[in-house]
Amino acid sequence: MKRGELLGPLEHIILLALAHLDGGAHGMIVRREIEERTGRNISIGAVYATLERLEAKGYVSSFAGEPTPERGGRAKRLFRVEAAGKRALKVSEQTIRSMTAGLKGRWESI
Amino acid sequence: MRRNSPPALACWLLESVVPAPYREAMLGDLIEEYSLRVESTSPSTASRWFWSQACRSVPSMAWSWLRSRDCLMSMSIALGVYIVMEMSQLAANLTIARLVAPEPKTDVVLAPVVFLTRCAIGGCVAARIRRGAAIFLALMIMITAAVSIDLRLCTIPVPWWYSLGFFSLGPLAVVTVPVVFGVRAPGAAEPVK
Image (cartoon, rainbow over all chains, first blue to last red; front, side, top):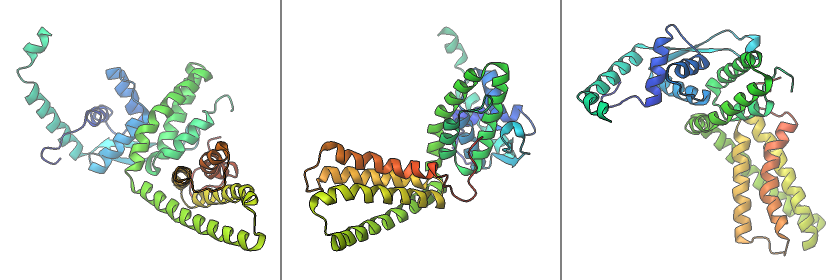
């Protein structure tokens, strides 16, 4: 991860979802994981557009699965977090922790 | 539409805008989830869900496609086909003027026929070369028609719907004729059955 380059909110959430789904997951599983954990109903298009961006940055990698009749003969594309993605998550977590330090008391009063 | 098949129009919409690397995977995911929802809820609820996913996915996928090389290639092909179409139009006009020597009124009748024919052929050629090129070609024709109407290039007085026909039916022919005749680029997926 380049210095100063932070993950976008959706990139962050999707990387975290993939980290939970260790070993590779396809777009719909990622979407379901986010919905179950956050209640956000994200479109599958937004998930794939973000996964494409993350793959271009080298944070995730993908590989093709077997086509099945339930999918209309279309193959799955399984994604997993790469070492660069784990580092990016760590940097983002550290940044958020640094920025939110000392704010807890103020938030409780809101 | 069969009971367990997803809405064909929504599938077509997604196939048109989703970039190649993830097209199959994304549609497969949606079809699989649709089948699960048909079993757990009802076909109409599952169809509504499928449509909502398709409509909400289009903006992000279209933006992603516009930023990709795939889009630039489609635009270049559309431009190439458009130039050939314009040259063929010029040749057709010269031929008609020399052989048929039309009166202005004859020209008013012949012009839409030649225009729609070349739009249909151009759309088929673009769609055969590359997926998405026909959409850019339709946009180019729409812009040209709008500019022609605005500049009042037609010197013969014609009703308003005549000009509007060029603006709407030309681009429509570019997009629909390849779909009607099943013209698609090599390697493009078959429509979902």
